[in-house]
Image (tube, rainbow, N blue to C red; front, side, top):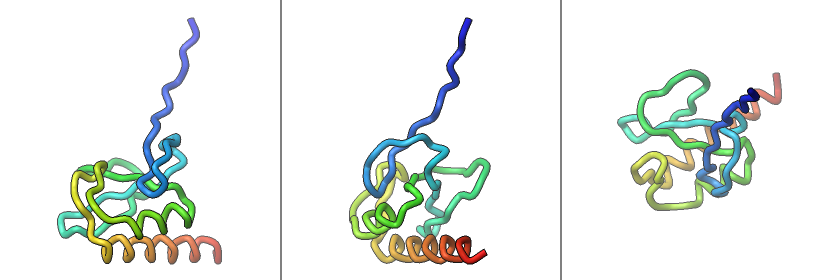
Length: 96
């Protein structure tokens, strides 16, 4: 009997397309409303996913309104701060 491994699929909150979970960046909203990247392992609470691409990050930052995956609205300043942190982390990873 052949068994096929299940591949979890998630939706990017930037572009809205679906992709395998392993290829997306995972983040959560802390109780203070700050967005935090989940590097590995389990995270308590609801999480969102983004492609590791600048275009998706900028779309996410420019959008307003409720994030269904987080179950709440995240203000634009908090989104912008999170995207700046992602850009800084990506830049430092490229420099290494």
